[in-house]
Image 1 (tube, rainbow, N blue to C red):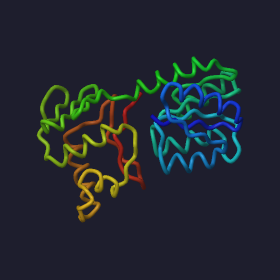
Image 2: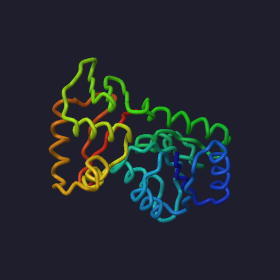
Image 3: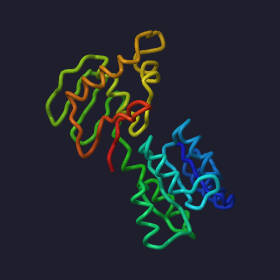
Length: 223
């Protein structure tokens, strides 16, 4: 899994990277908040470790902007340890808040704990969340214990989105990845399939098939 670490202190970045890489994570290091947000939008990581006091764009602004397009988990790692700072960070959309100086082993434990909240139970060709099972091998969709009839491409679409939770895909990307590069149809094909799926899969407290206006769609897993 790929983690973006954003901090203007290169020593802390190096320390964080060493411990994360020992655990098998790939680490993308960023020192500027504005550049980090651009890179985040271009290639969303699986998790962000974020300082608050950054050049280019502060951590709170980064978190707000990131939450407009993605539900990728964010852990704030900062020297600002007052209660109001923690509350503000969590209300902005952070999943966890760690105060510097920190114990690297605790950071690793927090990273793994946050990732577990977002991790679906995925077998070779099936995705399960509370209240929904999508089995691509059997082309079977079960919602709240009842099998729901869906067209093959509808099932392939919801399976793909659910297997990549909280990641936003444009209509063009979905046409390429679900329909295939040989498909030359209109991108509105995706909208039609999403509409049909919404009629069959109601939003719940655990998940939501969500439109990200001006971008595309995602299967949002709610903490």
